[in-house]
Image (cartoon, rainbow over all chains, first blue to last red; front, top):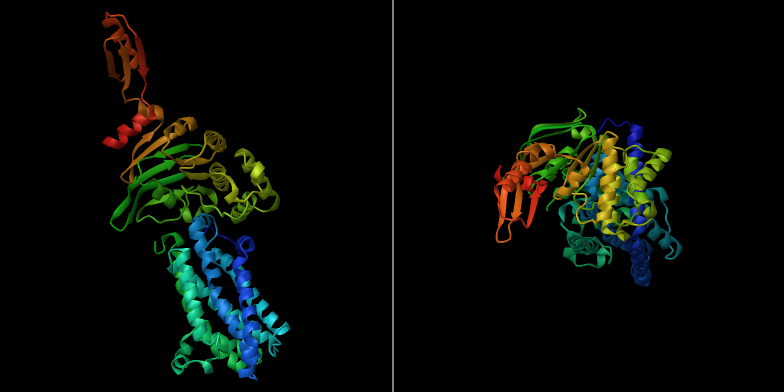
Length: 255
Length: 275
């Protein structure tokens, strides 16, 4: 620990950082609100079509597709939360305090994770209340949402360490979200996509996220854990790489 | 308090520090001056634990920088604050990270904002403050936890005279209370105001160190005598003796006499240019 911090000191510093980062999120809620509204509109628009095409699973597809699509867009929230520290030059101010690098990263990650869970929770809640989604495995669904949120957190953090500006981050996350989530079956069911796209789909994290969330909604633990393990692997690789780059200091990254 | 010996720091082929040696004692204000690229900011970053030297040693109260963070207060060269939060929220965050809680934290915020005349702006967002107020807010972060070593990198760049006076007064008070202060600036009259000892950096090392009086003692001033049809300008180490000698040797009526003592600017130019 940086200056011999005890566990309670660490907890207090992480709490202070978490409070502060939640405050920052509250001061700039536009992205979160947008990423909650987009899937609700999509659900409303696509429900008639999907329930006609997929009588048994149309509602689950109608909820999980827009959820995954909008949550990949929310990668931008993750990336921005780190990139802004570089723009504001505040990361160095934080590094000059007794807080350790893990404390800074955990204090940063908790609020973002909460935001991602809140966004997905709101979409699921809307799906249940308005689209008539029936959730058989609520705890399994919560686990699936957590795994997907952690994957997004790790991937977004990695993106933030790779880009030089907010504009680059926006391009990368917008393009990546549309390509990856669409390819994974977020906007159209896989069965309706060209055969080549169906073959390539498993390369997309969005594919595994939709598979995992659908399985969790119907309470199928075995079918949930496989995709969860794959997403967990992606999260570990992306998160580890991001942490290694962050240890060098955001100010020195790629600039 | 601060002991740095033989620091070397390279960025690729560029040598930013090349045997940088400097110490600052408790209660001492040291003005670190030098051209851009002299190594001032790199040195400050190493002392703050934000960069590691390639060679050499630095300690703060006997500890390496990364273990002495609670003893150090830092105000970087550029404004480095969260724009969307208030001064009070900013100080709460940094105070908490330095281990201040509840009443001690509230007392520290009150003390530092009073000293820096920020009391009326505590609940204003940083992005709504003027440049001078933001500078003072940044200094408040550096001074909040009563650090034993304060590092300020050009803290008055672009500020109005009132802000400068307020900040310098707060620093003088902290030094009087025993803090060691390392003050980087290009504006030398501030160092005279602070009665700082000087360290002049060039090419990644300190090339001159001492009080202003010590460093100025060998530097010539100038005696100017206006004779009407000509003006005599005579460089002089002892300006009084030179003036007396001139007055006795000139038979013409004098239109005017002036004596210019060497300034810190002259010292800086002389040392930094010729070392």
